[in-house]
Image (cartoon, rainbow, N blue to C red):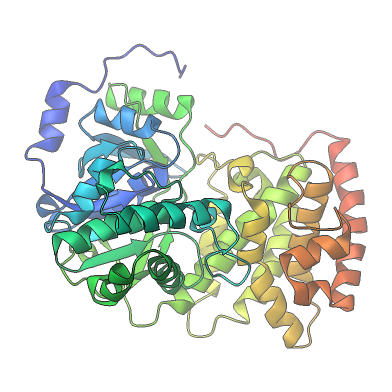
Length: 476
């Protein structure tokens, strides 16, 4: 189906039928993108009390998603793309779609007592953390926001006029507005792939509040509850072809259509002082200890993606489905999973890795390696390094993790990824591993293993690039 297919836009009758009665805004979201639509918005729309929970969603850097959704009253088509066919539905719980630059609207909504939940999908880099998982005290954007907010709050400037540059600076701006309004407790729910994301966000907000305002600092512990989560649903960035296929299936053009896999998972741990949707009725799980769930997803799914983004791309592949079908990539992933599983007691890793192979092999989900490879250095730090350190502490070689590190180094040296600004000595093996983690950088055995893998990978990649890929296929 051509992307130039001529069909009517999502029409008024379809919008009215999907919307019926607009639910009141009780959730504010930061980071409006495909994943939020396929995950948190989908769960909310499928909750038993969906009619009580509307979402006001703000974009990150680009206003495009807000513009597309606003033209459709927030309604969008979600296409579940399985190996054998598609299932589609209209999702209508985003009742306001706004650009991230509309700070007056954001401030007013977070301060509204009717709003009970603030969710975030701002990516790992959006938290502006240092290597220890703390708010980076040297980050220029964070420093500028602290100065701006400290002065603005002290001088009682209208908060809607302040324009912090970072995502967490904007969150703090909204929280200050809620404090001033005397609104009830707010649950703040990070939905990004950070280990212990609730505790990480809580510490970052406490650091900002302490630096900005004594009143906000005192209010924060009782004013908000930060909920930890594990989120899982493969959702590639939509393409023109995806929108064309959605149009063919539905009979209308939807500029905000999202294509995702049938699988979804959401695990949450924490308090919701002003209530929440009945997400459990849509399949979400609420647990006391989220750590094993977070780490299983972060190390096994996201870690394998990070490995495939480097190694698969270097071996000439464009998609996850192509890379996992390559025996060299599959073997590297399996060895990484062997190491991951040793450090995940209490959760089923065998069934999970079997499900991951099935999900990765779904050739109808065009999950592009270049999309996964963005901010690769941060992802290697979060998804690979923790397991490597555990393996080395246990006296094992950590070859699976070292393969992922070596693939990343080759990708940096080949220009696929930029050299990290913090690697002081350029692209030498020691400097790059030290950038990832000083303990690993000082580990002679791990460094020697990585060097030997670099040689082997280089030879394998050269051989592969000299011939057409045997795994490349039509993914439609």
